[in-house]
Image 1: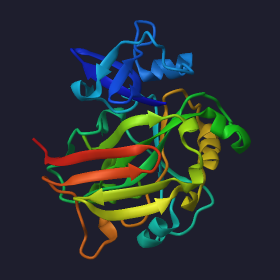
Image 2: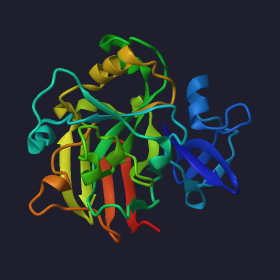
Image 3: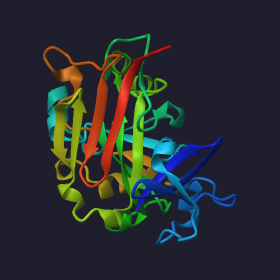
Length: 276
């Protein structure tokens, strides 16, 4: 099942993508995807669900209102090596704010404060079942689905200090979409590939099995220090090839188009615009 969050005729809702339509699953009791994850997703799309043409809606970030967004840094060997960072025994974790995210098709925003706006294509994991101290053995039971993520990074602000937070939280810097794909849609998660294209040129490409810290390991680590809740998002790290480590550096700029293409999941496409 593919699940989207969207706005249509002055209201926000969520639904399942069926061909070129959305089966609207929103209700007063369950108005958004986060609420549906709390309540439990339907096993099948109800035949009575109203249908809306996908072309008529404005997509929203897959989960518009996550309680927490965790990002895993340096989680592919090629990326860690290109940064010159030493290996660590535990995942590098930082956080992103929900109001920095934009949907598929919406513009990523180059901030006035920097010209060093970089792409980071990533696989996002959406939590379906919450919990604390989740073991690696059962971690995947807590996953509701997967989506494409672009963890847009303002590199000079990221590197002001050892803390990544400022460079990862400029408004309009993170793309999240177009939809969430439930785990039954993915036959072999390790074989899933993450590809980033800037203006049609492939700039990143790697398989999920190249992660240093696996998804179960990351879920176990996060849930050791915090409670994971339905709708929480984990962006699992970017492959090598980021713009900051190219010669010369390759930055996103107004007029560009960036795509994050994840096999079996979808393609997240965003134009890039200047800050108003």
